Image (cartoon, rainbow, N blue to C red):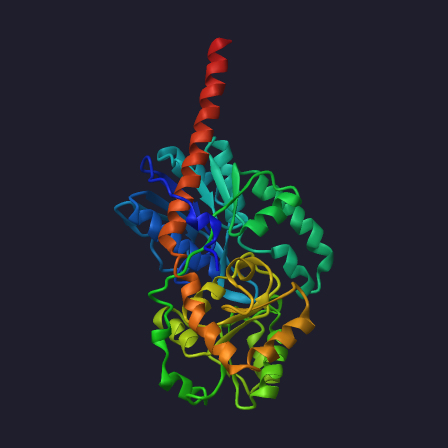
Length: 408
């Protein structure tokens, strides 16, 4: 399978040290794709010698902001998100950001999330005439169908478009998402992909003891779903797909890793499956590696970091042909792809996944090698190039405006 185009580019070294104000409403140790990605990006920027001013909600009442070297934090007020009490929604902090950025001006503002804190950061950056980049991480408008508020889809999509068009540039993780966003009126979109930690996510972390705790022997087929357990993740389809697998392999086991508002109703309705709860670090990596295949039924992802983690762990992936699956899966090579939204094809592919043991074994052998080239260092280098280009374009506009004023 071809290496994604953007990661094959020759990455120019940074021309200067940047001071980056990075605004996010979720950050490690919170466990979700946006937090994980943002944590990796911050680590990568610091490793390259850049300065990071991180603005995020306070995660606990006793928490104090971190300071040291090239890294400093500003903790904003936050309120719990309904049904996700462990996550905070950052409250607007426009005046505080204006004061902080006036005292020590960043080169560029990078806004990760579209919540109230993110909106206030864009407003503060525009007030101070700072270049600002936004990131498109979550298809919030696509969630509306899963929560009985489909009428909100168009207004929410318009609200998101307005937010991202206030910045100089919007970042998307795939070429297909960039095309989609530009097709619905996003003015300027660039692609910065996602990476995977192949040292952490590794088939060598497979654990016979962990499998035994699931009621699985060496010969048992274990299917994994690693996800936030929520309606928008289409988990009922994942269960139906597993039932097609179990029709051929009656001893097969389904493992859910993750938590969320759908966990209790799923566990009550399907008590025969294993619900491992939230895992992270080496424990999470062991859960991946101790499974045999990965089921990804979601239809609302902008990327899907779990796909890269599963592949790096040696698991072939069953998924719909969009987002990370479209970028990274080759049908029959390291997983199975089905047309977007075709649930019948998804279930049929699940059944076919175990029909030929040799095919499954071959896909397992090829899964890890298919993502070895997608490392976070290359992703962060790409991001820095985009940040520098955005800053240079901003500086050129300011110079041109000042030259015109001088001529007058």
